[in-house]
Length: 466
Image 1 (cartoon, rainbow, N blue to C red):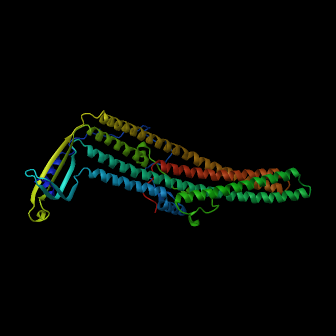
Image 2: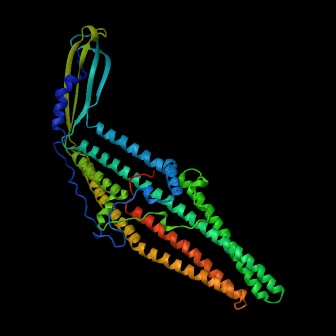
Image 3: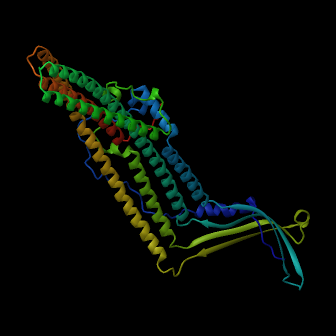
């Protein structure tokens, strides 16, 4: 009678113990060493000392902006995809890890075949447990595949953090841009109101012969210019609000939007300290992602090399066998089998060597990409650091200019009302003050966006807004 067997855990114990002792004896993957920093070891000067970045909720000092960030983290669809990618990578790691352990199956089989001793047909019923094609990982193939999957999971998690940081930065930048456009719109409306009053005054002067038509047409032209500026800024503010709603993933309520026309303050963001060492860049999530990708590529070399050596698999079974179905329970015979198989490719047209070469080239590509990520991080950080002082100086200079232009307009208006200055001088003063106001708003926005860029360049902070 043929005896095909199904493994029980007790019978498989010695087999699995031997497999555990033999598996992983050799690892053919190259030893991993983090590549050296391809950038200067010291960051440019320009930031406060210390390397503890504030959390998102500590960085943002405006409660409305914090609320928008919270809504974004809860509703943005791209962020949802990033989180789902992590779940997929985690499941793929479980699949890779499962290959490191035997698969135990329970089954009942029935067969009818000719007897080996008579001319009769005989029945064979089998019941038990079995292990099929369990690979002894002598050369680390399975272990390296699992290690590559683990590194890919870490890379995906880091990529998700990078996406989160980029998203929060984009939301904050859009919110500040909306606030700046709203402030400029308020200033433009003030300018428009002033131009309308000036036009009325010019018309009166023309009517009484105190001014010429040239002056009147010039005033009308400046009024039209102010109307065009208001229309442009209304459009920009509306588009900013639409862009913010798309990033947040839902309509943004009025209590989360910037206060219309409120002055944009550089105190809306906390200071961003930075240390001196370029090794701070290693905490950036995109750099972590690049390094984990490199680690995965390094492990893939070991898996490709292991494929050039014999692949040893074990199969076994243990259970009861009988020539009747009832006999499985009442009078079945216990029996077990153990079988091994070793396969080595003798001729594969260079496939295994080519796979090793591909894995090595992929590792070299990953090294270059990791180094490029470090260089890009250094460039972004250096740009933001050196710009800090210049933005502060620019804001200070614009504030001085605005103060001077406001005083100039006050004096010019007094002289105009007293007949010591003409309308052209008054309009020129108004135009200069309006330009200074707009430039100060843009300078403050630039300083805020640069501070935000520095925060992002240094890797942000893992703690979420609360």
